[in-house]
Image (tube, rainbow, N blue to C red; front, side, top):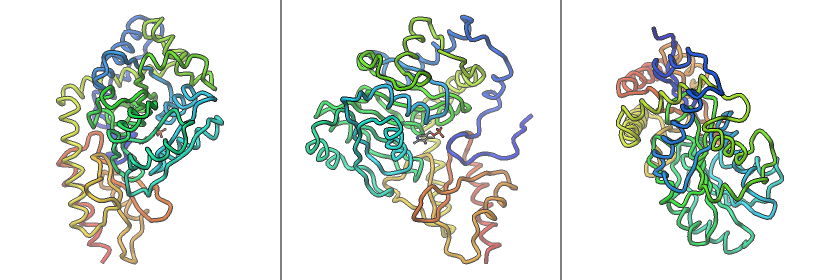
Length: 366
Ligand SMILES: *Cc1c(COP(=O)(O)O)cnc(C)c1O
């Protein structure tokens, strides 16, 4: 029986299948071989999805996506290194905040939130500051829904021999990413985004040779990526400290369901289709999307508040929730916006229903 009162139009947590949730009804022992094998199976499957079966490794890390980003930055950037962050949203800005907490040397190249970071601006920054050793950016900026060009920046990273770190939190599994081909050294994502698991851990896909050089760099015990990796390798899938066993079981099921859907290509096709239908349908109702269609990613769309005087976000939120869908407030400071995510168990029939609810709501506003 489906106990959900509404579907989530939020990009993590998101609406998962009944079968993924059912996996969590079993209590598992963390040091038992069955559980450790489950972890190893997940690690191998993640490498397969990343086209990174040789020369790369995976580390699973307790906590939400931010824990994964913080783990990587604080475990691989040495005091003698310097990170250049391409900022065009709240999540890339958060990387700078992480650097401040850990007193890591960093610089930023910032662009407007409705534009993508330009590879030539990154290149200029590298030329101006030879101390830079690493470049980081967000792939799908969930703040706006923009899809950044990691291939162009990856080329610059390769050309200048810099290490490339990508937060692919809300794209990995929903957008095909060839990690080795893009020159990515560390990619971070989490259980409750495009792979459609439940929240509880993040994962890191890392170039093994580079990771091995980071031993002893971490500023935090629990977020030490190298130490976590070493234990997982040496002890065949053992996590350091208590792992989210129910979440891990659900994630393995979610990976199986991703495969059954037809893999990343099929999932991307569904996301892109439902995203375009939502965006076009909302525009037809008079809503304006915040970013241009040519930079729109497939997972979430930001809309400006309509100019109608009587518009009230909380009122619209409640109207939609009562009818089975929960939407997402905006994350921009300069403009009033709201967001509609379309990852998770959201299909064409949901899009039709959502657009009908907005139609009814807008009628009531006049
Ligand atoms: C979801 C997300 C994160 C992590 O957020 P948490 O709330 O810590 O899970 C980081 N970056 C991006 C781009 C995201 O979409």
